[in-house]
Length: 189
Image (cartoon, rainbow, N blue to C red; front, side):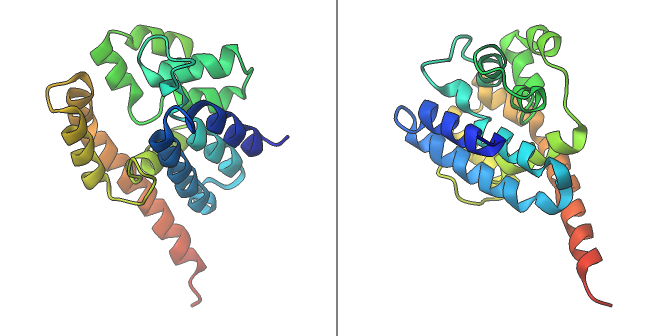
């Protein structure tokens, strides 16, 4: 079984029944990841696998700390023996270090999981932050607003996402710039 086939199967088994909306979001994020193939090259399969797996830590069967990037990464590493790069992307997706800090888990996350290449971290963040909870495409600004509204501005998630907003916008701009460069390079002269 290939990496992406395995990732879709695992994510579906953990999310589709207990958390169908989270599963729909994960499918939307993975679809966005596929669209970034031109800028991630030989890491396209890796990014897509991480995208469909990024929220498995919400699954009630594996959630232990209540911090989904850490729970998902630990499960992938300890129970699945998953590719180390996929694990690192899941652990650090969408500014997870900032949320870990809000939860008092930053040292654990940093100590257990190294950061993946910055361009791939940006790409996964972009996919997550341009996908609604229902799996449709959106803008980073609209997604940030939706998260703050859903959780509330004074909750852990609300505080974290507001702190992370500048980096989310910056990462999204970096990805969009790279996509524009690839498109421009393909234009006939």
